[in-house]
Length: 318
Image 1 (cartoon, rainbow, N blue to C red):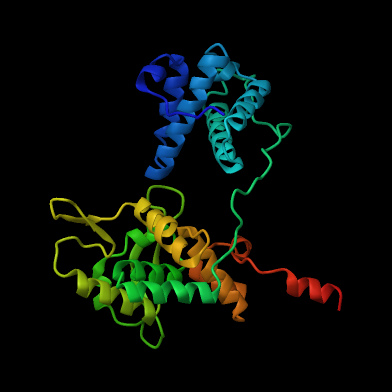
Image 2: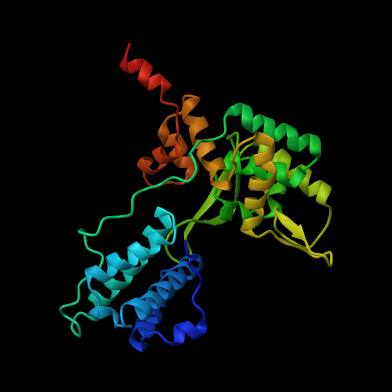
């Protein structure tokens, strides 16, 4: 297995000039978020390096479906997950659509090289999708309390209460400790947070959280003391400066600390699935979980609700 490396500037300079130009035009679309731009730029550079190395550096309008299949096989042979291959495939397909739409008069015979005849890579889950049980969640909370890991505890409580994604949690401002509950409601609302969505603005939402999360945040802020950083979740540099955490900090907490406590793999997105699953198992309808997670469709929410199949099997044989 050969590792797939990022494209260097020297390698990119060897790519066909038209392919460089069309890539930049495509990436300059204003509806792409900063994170999406980073992913797309990397994916397209990797693709055109492949085209340079194995497709005689042809311009994109001369590529055929067989080249797309060859590229997909190239990625799979290097051990990329099915989701990683699908992402790189979809980026190339989007670029092809861009060429068809805006350069159709110049290249009327060009068609998207990823057509329906090229199958998606088979889905292979490296890790079982399994949310935390109530017992595992409480063990995690209790252990962090005993260790006085107040920032980690605030992260767990807030992430679970809101069902928020890692990047959304990272944006939380410490001003929320001064917020009051929504009038007549048993919950608090955050300030506006940029959530996952198209465009640079994404989907703007206020996240909902409960007393347990508020208490944990207040405890952490009190222990942390005064500093100029406006964010709840922070790290301190060697020079003593307090900065907003990187998203990878949450990954580290989950993989190195929470996993050891629970006794099996824990990851940030698992808390989102855990919240959705617990809501539905407690008797709440799927629409309640949908509203909390901010999904446009309940069908998306159903993906996050992972239940054991024993009850369904019992019903089938009763």
